[in-house]
Length: 432
Image (tube, rainbow, N blue to C red; front, side, top):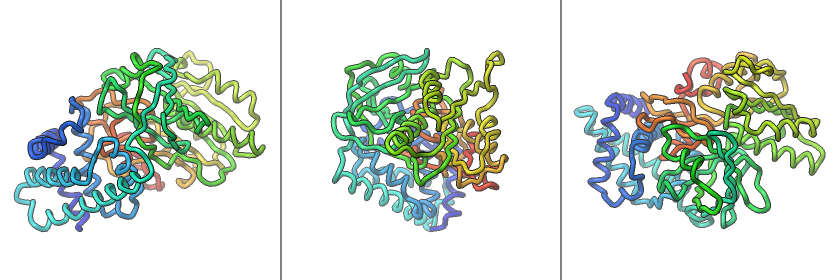
């Protein structure tokens, strides 16, 4: 397949903006009405993300075939929608029809063959992964809500317990569907290491205009039943034996780093050894430091742990002020591994600051997305447990784990940009 031709043609199609997803879904639902029930009743949040991510994935299929892990995750995860192999045929046919419609005379036999071959690669990887996982795990897990604690005006700490064994690794993320919003799955990052009782803590940040997070924060309660999808993600999991860790969190990006911290604490208590850890938590206002008492207490009790609060928007705050990435870059970086989690802008700024301070790319871990939808518009950073502020604009693919639908862009890394490319770091275009 001609990768350049795929990318050029997709970039040309995306110039038509919202007409592209509208045409795609019209074609899909008219030609295959049986798939309509698999999608949310409201398509405003869904449509642009799905089509943009799909086209971008396929147009980069030559790269994906060499690094298929996130597509395999997507294939396994799509089982929760009851996606079957024949549904990939329907989506592929509508994608090609959409390309033909917007490319006109440029849609010739050679280009059509390239797109067909590329889509076949994507579909094969996803279907094979789904088929293999179906032999050992369910399509989704029912989970009981054990508690829902309103920690701040716009943040709820949720504890759920799956009814069947649910295995995840610290640093992964989990999609959840609540009964009040059927077929609207959102991603969250467990804020704890796996426990004997199987319970999972999730941090849910409410965003005005979001379709799911306000309901979770305001209405979800103990006794409700939710659905969980298979865990995904590898980049924020602990791998190797780092001697010192610099954890940099923005807002509710704290959640997966809390799980990492708990895993390390368990290791210290069990063996008396482990990495030294410095956690920096950056927020806009001091009342957003929602886990301050726990972290301050841990810093007093554990000689291997330091904790720094960073507030950016309150000039009266007596502690560290400014952007958390700037403060992180002032730390001693030699010999440390950094783990960064937050919204796209926060992560991009932190990567730039760490790189400028001399930290090598291989020593910085973060969730990144290679193939953001071309021409995307960003409505603001989404963190683990958040969703975009508006469903009327296509949300950008998220860094780390987030309260956002997966279809199919949850694990799609973004193109390199600016300083990040020169330093070997992938910084999302959506981060500016």
